[in-house]
Image (spheres, rainbow, N blue to C red):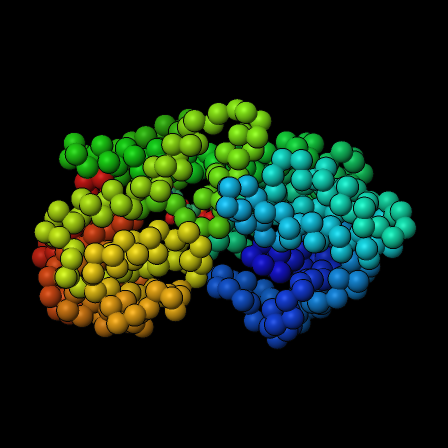
Length: 423
Ligand code: UDX
């Protein structure tokens, strides 16, 4: 019942199926039973309440009940990065063991989690090994492409549904679950489905790192990167999406999945040199722009800086691999006094100190600040009254790490405005 699990469960409840949400975390399940999510995601809380009432979804911590009482089981557990970049499959294996132990008749086991190539094959071994008595089952790969912050919309309006299975019967059953959703369905084998997920995320990360590196060139050529990407995006072969330059991609997927795909390639002794550079550009993007901004403000050391937006992107409280955290750490080392704000996300206790404080309002955050660094493009910042906010600040530097404010307007208001890639 993490991000993917709860969204998938609520999607199927909304489509009229009977869903059981199973998790071993008792606190999480009790909260869900009471209509409370353990994370922030627009619209999901209302859907949860709706289907607790409709009776289409209920929750349990009992693997025995969850597995025996359902025909189709979706594995939606996490697959975090191991130290070497490979995906840690402990939770997938744990789920497979529970399924093998408790299943008492034919089941279709579907993997939603992002898993390395051939995990579906391994799953068959793990389930078979843990079965007390042989029971028939099929395994299906059905990767999830939803984005945090728009999880509900993405689930109801997917660009495609990928179903990978060696069993035609199981693939058809999974296809029928989605019959009321209008989206192309791609039927394939499990290995291809697994790779489609990694290849898609790595490609999107590639688009971002490409424009982020281009932004560095735009900066020195004094060309506005947003104008360049606008012109590029008009070419239908390129498309306008995922061309937004910024301080780098973060989140629970792009960083982890790029590393996992590189690990798979290494295992196969194949070099993915482009993806290697994608990761390197991303890892250095915030430092690159901090260095440029530092020159503009004549050194960050001893200054008071507001950090606006700490989540890895707007409309989520997820801080995983958030570029803002790296910026906070880099500025901490320079002895900068940091005043932090986010509409939803909370800075972990370990970051807080006399010199790093989080505030509830943008006004308070900006008090006595020399500069603002905008790290995620929440609407609250775009729509803020910057004329009025100026009165709270000591100096008026704005470093827009997401190119989200109107540079010309900000300059007119008397700010020294700098974005990413000469903006
Ligand atoms: C991503 C994929 O989009 C989704 O299909 C997959 O299932 C999970 O991973 P998510 O991580 O939720 O989704 O967010 P996404 O909107 O893709 O953004 C990822 C990161 O890239 C964010 O940090 C965002 O700020 C950054 N980004 C995105 C850019 O810097 N520029 C862009 O143009 C787009």
